[in-house]
Length: 122
Image 1 (cartoon, rainbow, N blue to C red):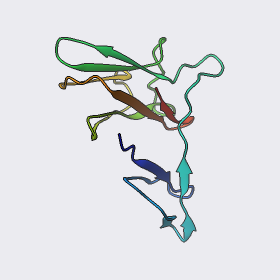
Image 2: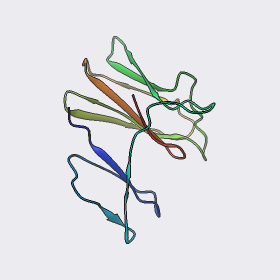
Image 3: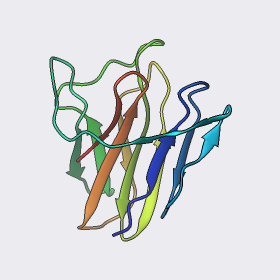
Image 4: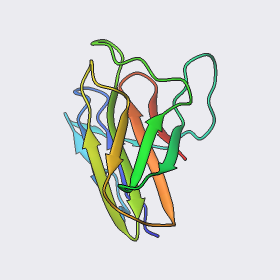
């Protein structure tokens, strides 16, 4: 299964997701940072995506305790990678830190991006 790489500009916070990158990308005149997903929670806040199969498809929740969704601190997106396809749902402050995808697959990787604590994967 191919997993797209995610890059972030440290200056303007733009995020770029690309499949099979063998080079650095520039934004605002500087190299973008390659984001490496974290896979284990640290501290009180929970970030690791929790995957749940439902009748409708795949549901992903951020943490076993819901992540804050405040203006200053929130989950920007949740995505799953299944059957070599990427499915993404953008989130905004005030929404629940979860997403449901109407697909059925067995081999699933879930990722989410916290605007403060970065990229997380399960």
